[in-house]
Image (cartoon, rainbow, N blue to C red; front, side, top):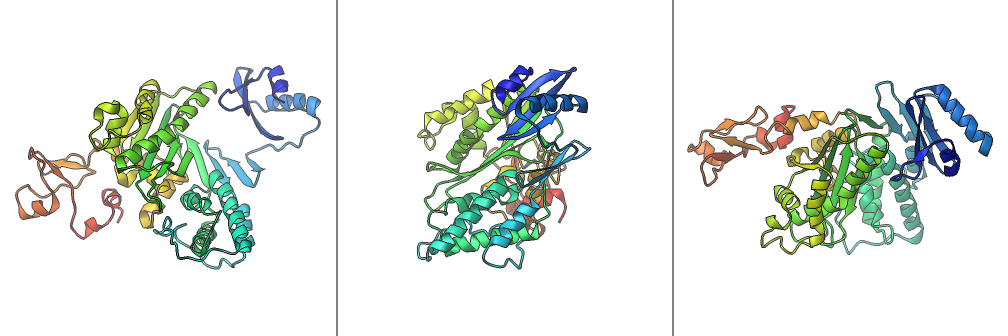
Length: 425
């Protein structure tokens, strides 16, 4: 098939062997294929018809579906006039729920509780029949979460590590995911591009959250609407600190950033702004400076992770500080709850544009601090004047006496910091 396309003047993208492009009538024609399914696009529908006819001469008659809505491998794909695409797997999700031996009669507000990663040794293992059902259901959910339901990826990532010897606690956790899906069955993943030349990546790590004290990496890339190329996985080695876990996380994820840039270049697009957001400033210094920023607590980090410094330079990646409360990748590192879960879910699933989040922390000069008792920006609530009793409660001056860290102890401040600065509670 590839030889046939190349004979028609198409050039295969070396970074994805199932994508080929050709310039026809001054515009790009792109063909993507998976086994015997193809997607052909060109600005002129007559060009698409012509290509289909040439392929059919070689391989026989094909079933052709045109328009903005398509069914593909359990996904309903809808290309909208505003340039976005939505992916829906409602029927597939319903099938997974209906095939589960227990009746899912209630819904859950989140796909997992705070104790998702907890594993107890005294819990009874599932019998062979239920263990096979567990394995099969988790496999279905893995297929779903990799294609459109990124909001269950954290829970499913953990459950995949339990398929060899699932216990009764794991069964309860699986049922919780199905309950969440039942209550959100109409949710769709919406993807879009605000600026093809601006790639924004988020990487985070949850330190020592697993039973064996290994950390968990989360990451995702966005072009403005929704998250692409997400990562949610347990790290393969133990870290001695949260800083080291963050560095390992970037090492794990940066290959996705490099691949995305190279793939897009072969598609004819240039990345002009390549941003990597992180919430650990110690890790940022190590990544930008290599061993020069290592202290006695981080000298042990394997030197292979310092290739990040070289990659940041050669790829033109800018590392940007992102406050933890706005860290999208945090969604993939731990089972968030409440308003923070639903807020980040909206960003990840493309229900809210990314700029509604990045605009809130890009103007704070990358630090949540106040100077001389006055707010640096309108996004920061000022502390009381230094030296007063309230100031001692709410802030702590640094050694130079010029900056006061922002801390809140009022009733309103018991909200998350993100809610406070958004002013929505």
